[in-house]
Image (cartoon, rainbow, N blue to C red; front, side):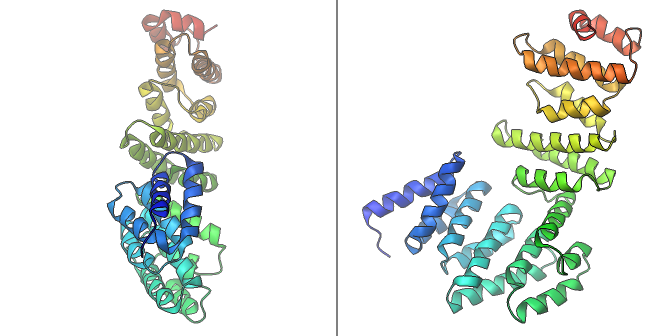
Length: 336
């Protein structure tokens, strides 16, 4: 298809916006590329195949979902092999084809979704999303549901029964994450984890914190790493509300390693379940924080005093004596 120069320029700028940091521009670009439709598909396909960022691949797949073009099938088939959020976005794009595309494209998309739903090597949430995209189709949906209800994975078999879609998807994402298959989007995991943490086994929540910390540590400093840290802090806060100290070691180590203010959720958790082992870390963080960062120093001090009062850690306590010896000014200010 020949594209006029002006249209080609528009498409190029919109695709550039897909990989940018501006969420509003990205969402607008996805919508406009979908409206442009077939004329943009070749460029979107090329962008997907040259992309190194998973976030860009997800954005491209979302634009292809709106475009509803048969060429989406080959890209989505590749994307499903990548797993995680990329695969879930591919399933959504194929689902749109099943519902709205002409028969050949719809049939091709259906074949890919059926295979993904039945593939035991795929992430749970990818399998369930594939099933949910086709479960309304007469006969096919019933046959796949029957097959999945016999699946050896209890999460899959439950999700194929009469379970609300959102709950089934959240359960699948939670169990995928516990298996080490974390989503690409920390906000999605945070939402799922906060819903599950109040009733989950404490050992599972502890494991989730460790997994999130590992993902966070694998990233370069920047907004994405900060988002993963915020998700970990939210998990700690939810765990603290249950009165559990199973992950207090992570709180302590995080304070020890911090060279900048942390999300307030970390200190909120320390307020509730911090113990003697945490006070020296808090004092060290307080002492190395510049006096100009009054807010962070105040938060550290408040957490320190909450713990020392609750645990009855007086100035005669060994930990307090060590603090006074190493950071006398901090010790005096913290114990005011």
